[in-house]
Length: 449
Image (cartoon, rainbow, N blue to C red; front, side, top):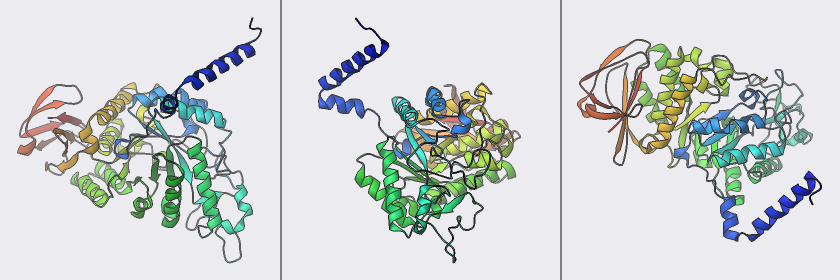
């Protein structure tokens, strides 16, 4: 007779141990390794600001919305820094998440290490990788590393300084001439891989020397026999030589703003894409975005930046279909129209704008399902200054994208090579393109041969 819940739990655990012991080694490996990290060219990335993502502002709040993230066609989550936040010289209500007080612990504001591991497990069960923000350039002033003064950049008087040329007074600049500091940081990176993370988004990567990134990535590759997703927040070409698979597409973001807000020529999007990707190493990509935590916090919300919800989505069509890895910042899919802070808590209304949410899910799932949008060669079709027309072709598949980035209806002449019969990816209807086409303000069309 079982006399307590504790006794029942013990029996259940014993039964589980017997089951696992009875499995063959191959079966046990299959259970542990059923999740696979997506290839770089297949990534659909979703950034999570934990302080804003849920009413609980913690890991559990992210775990509880994993079905929502999965429904968008997302296969990679990027979590903003998860570490304890420094309190010395802190900024804002809660301090900057980029002022790291301990590289191998989780911020108690977000929960426990077990809560974090449960988040990873839920993501993997949904086929979603988890990468975490890594802040290599600097630490909080109350990080224990500060006792090793040689690990930090110092002025002529021996005083540790903040990163030069910034106003980041809440952090202390690390000295990458110090080998001991480098090795300790690499050990910390390895710690998180052992804890289950699938890679890193490396903050302010342009501030950190190439030699460190090369050393760190080579070391992680040797220590861990598993693929890692590595994204550099930077634009240096040598990031790819160091081993990163992705870095930021800031030039495209600037061009996109000019096209959407200043009536810049749509051809400039193609030209910028070509200049950014022409010399990329095989298997590497640029991260394309209409917003992220920095832009939304410090610039403007997407609707304010681009001039309304329809304009935002037209811009998102460009970043998702021209090429590169598409990024969605958790909150933009429901049309959030306020600046989402990173130094304090806020809350997203997930019930707002279900029609906008439906459009994001539709487009991203089309992207996920259509090989031509992920792997296809890009051809730009001349239609004039205002209407964009381009196609992506892979093997026997060809997809045509037409976008009006303006807030007025426009007509455009179509070249002969795209005239003819197509199938709409948005509604499945057949359509015939003739010599001219008219598009409503910010209208987009996705067609397949």
